[in-house]
Image (tube, rainbow over all chains, first blue to last red; front, side, top):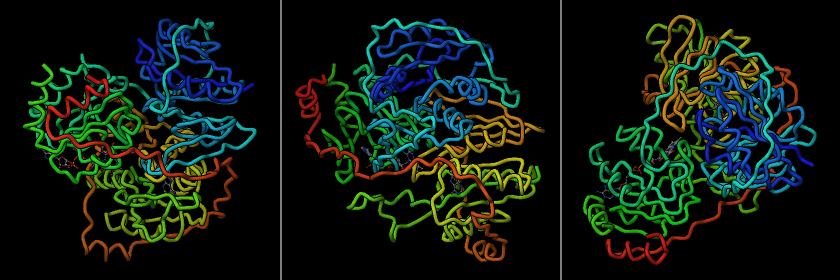
Length: 313
Length: 249
Ligand SMILES: Cc1cc2nc3c(=O)[nH]c(=O)nc-3n(C[C@H](O)[C@H](O)[C@H](O)COP(=O)(O)OP(=O)(O)OC[C@H]3O[C@@H](n4cnc5c(N)ncnc54)[C@H](O)[C@@H]3O)c2cc1C
Ligand SMILES: Nc1ncnc2c1ncn2[C@@H]1O[C@H](COP(=O)(O)O)[C@@H](O)[C@H]1O
């Protein structure tokens, strides 16, 4: 048997959709018995959602005001206090998991397997390196806890027909006071969430201004799509950082991805490799994005996109 | 602040198209352009700005790697760092070992702030800063896009999936830089000349007397599954048709 502890990500109210994909990864470990740990100010609903995920044996739910803001320095010692009973401690490879899990690994005195994209054996995993230009098969050493983050875009979520037991968990480790959560500034949006949207429309530097980016929003609204952007578009201030797709932004796997005025740099493309269909609209027929696009249209976006919006009426 | 320590890792330049060796034993690094990890350059730029504002006195750059990493340290000195330390090792350290080595240097130097990159773009591990903070028993602020110092603490704006988080950490602390923290300066020729005279000390890895860490071993390397080049359509009607054919509209 392989005991797996998976750390749930949430926004204070709902379980993050990546958790169901992490469960799918964990379920690939031979003999896996999966527990999910929820640390939240108010954990009830989140824990219930976690308990509904198939393949989950148990949900451990810990409530405390100190969990506000999900600070790694607060969470890591709580996780380590539990870790003794587990062979694997996993989290999502999101900014939440990337911040937290190495702290857990360091407390356990091990290295972390980052961005697991496939489980090849008890301690053998595949992961991307060099912005996805190479895939390495790695082996974690025997006799130590495996700490890892899961590249959610590589997995399909498990179903939600389960009703695992939920146990409440007391806060056991000390809470450090050297780190304080101040505020979250996230732009609430009515559009489908970029991470889980079935369709995503993304714009690049070619949009030229925040105003012009409206074209992308209009097309997205027609398609009921989430909106993404290249780093260049974020750096130029056309859109906020949470819309960046790529090596240092979101790694996503929608059924349809439409890249508009995006050249297709490796750091961008690594974020969309697992998309179902990639469409590229670019005026330069030599743009690298066409090397990976399933459907390409060479043309000026300022002509093509309004026409496309009309055609979808 | 008396001293800021900045980690500079020597990595394959981000413009290089990295290829897996034919025999799957690794990636091709022979004759390939090497640079400072881009996030580390941003970390150093931030340290220099802190010093230029009069909020720090000395910037020390550290690299753990082969003798060739002296090139990246010299570039760091040319950007404006005061001193450089090379922890010399022929073997690529795993993140836990790198964090242990950095901690040893932090203690020897009595640094109050460590600025690292949020990830090294070779192995894309994104672990070292968090591990260093943990072993040091100090706070971390990862993926930083803005720093505001006040007395013994620093307010850090962090780029997270949902947008931006703001946290406050007490010093000493480890901060890891994200892309939008700043835009690093270009190095000017006279600075390169000046940098040659700045101190660069080498410490052999063995002198740090670090414990062995359970490294994760690489078994084999392969190229990623290739996406096929698809079709080119002539116009919007062609695009709509293609999407309908695929059942996407
Ligand atoms: C460490 C590191 C990490 C990075 N991480 C990321 C990341 O996470 N995500 C990311 O996206 N990038 C990332 N980058 C940046 C990446 O290398 C590219 O610079 C960036 O993706 C380019 O954005 P772009 O395609 O919008 O701009 P450009 O490369 O400038 O491309 C603009 C494209 O628009 C086309 N175009 C111009 N006008 C029109 C028009 N009127 N109609 C149609 N097409 C037009 C051009 O032909 C061109 O192909 C990273 C870089 C580094 C060094
Ligand atoms: N060998 C090294 N030498 C200097 N700094 C390093 C080294 N390895 C990692 N770092 C620092 O730690 C950061 C994160 O690295 P990693 O955990 O490997 O992604 C890098 O951006 C560097 O600032």
